[in-house]
Length: 239
Figure 1 (tube, helix red, strand yellow):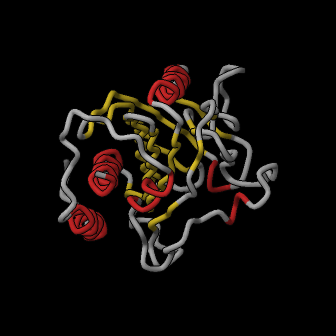
Figure 2 (cartoon, helix red, strand yellow; figure 1 turned 90 degrees about the horizontal axis):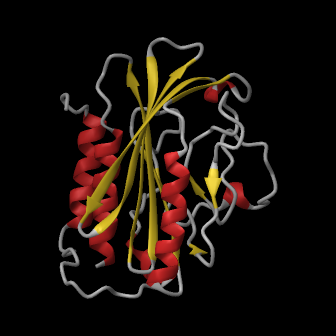
Figure 3 (cartoon, one colour; figure 1 turned 180 degrees about the vertical axis):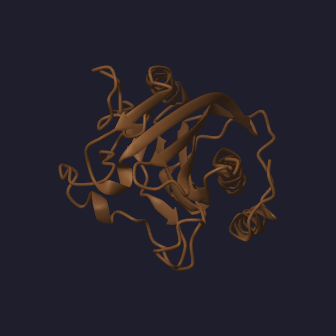
């Protein structure tokens, strides 16, 4: 990995502090979690301490750069706008999952796109078996994602080329998928958007962590590693 910029180093410090004093759950016994427990484990931002539900006030409202309906997991980002095979899933809806609110850690300056923004949500299911059925549906959807696609219609910030890679991930006994998405802007040859998306499951929970920031073209991607660090901190706080 290339040398981290100060913004990324600051994020790693936040994650290290968040995890301090929170031992990972190494016991073989699987806990049954409640939604309130999961929400308490999410990382918090000093300037956005409450769940961010503002863009979900009306779940049927589609005038968003990237609309993810309430109760769904995004599996192939922005493919609903891309030149992809018809039927490529943008989201999947796990059955019988209770979704938590969205918790966002973001830069204090809305114009700062190089400091990572972390969005955390998850689903709590009545049993571990139901959760694993839902996770299988998520993994199946991710397997259908194209490796590359172009978005030609929509708000200017989403136009451009997307390159998507996925790999299995295991974090402290939680297993799932990590996606890395590189978005080259249509009208900008200086920066690219670097996105890391981690979806993992254990016991009766599916945890969904999305991290995004911008890099200068030519800089090495680090979003997946940072997203995994954020996920690990949430897991350790959950216990």
